Length: 497
Image (cartoon, helix red, strand yellow):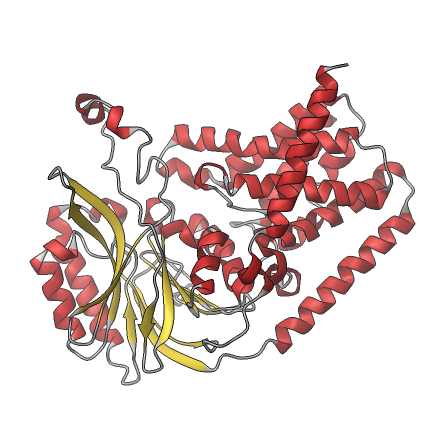
């Protein structure tokens, strides 16, 4: 019976996210697990918690098998470990309903924060992101980030589990339900009353839809150039256009050292429209060795380089190999290890459009990292632009999950998030979290080539920053600190029994 409850919770949690997107299930997904672990021995409870976690992650990120099966299994097992502190607390807690819910909320949110921070972080598919399509529920992110939204969800799960398991405590449940209902009512009010932006950027998002197997093949270079040329020319038929945006590594080489790539960009810019594009970049170290970056470049309407940005947060094993300098060259060749990319050290803002709106580029999965977006907005950005290439994975599930996780960045900072993707999902996410534009064909497919014209409204430079933008992850850090202290204290007590 314990294993059945663990599996049911894993399946319900999986159903919350794409491909199924049963968003409402998030309010009770963990109830079977929480009821069960209160009734079984400690070690069995921890094993069942790990079973729930690993099954959820294996199902949720199975798109990773397109790149690595071993990485899929190891990452799933690693992420499942962060279920254990909350499960351990649920197994040991003997207090009242609201106290149990509050303690479990702190522990769960602290564990999620640590998963999003340790080793560069993997804050994918948090409970808060699961609630993203339900706008009233995510508005509190402007105070405590995605972690506070997760807290709202786990608090509800914990109260339900307590009431069902103990067959009492309905007053606690009623108080908790009224609290949650009040927060949701405020969220619905906030969505309708959020001040509109004061200036607008007319942009075109170009989605070339180049298969990953073709991106770095020399015989496909002309295909890539042709696709970009054709779609950009189509975009430039709009007389109001102020900016064309291409996705991550849209060009097949290093634009700074590639005459054909630069000529393409120059010829299109001089039609009168600046272009923001992703491309590799290369610099020479003092030793003469090349250093590579995953970068974004802004070219003005005369084809001149007007700004550049190097990706700050790299993907482990995808973009860099830990301790690479100590790995023999022959071994790297034998294992077909990819070249490592160097990380940038700071964000930047590109003034865009006639109203010179400061936009901050985020590359690849950087838009799922709350700290980077917050830092950019705090430093003056009033629009976030994500250049991404999800063609590494499947056509549908990974891009949909990516967009859902990115949604909270717009709400946390109350600025729009524009996403230009190679194979989808190219879209605009408003400061409320609403997806107002999305590129799709008549059949609803988001991974086909195309152009999406958008009018993006942004706040003024003088607009008041959100509590989260000003003070950051205070809630997440406090929860993480409390969780670590509780784990240390409880572990010490058990050791000295």
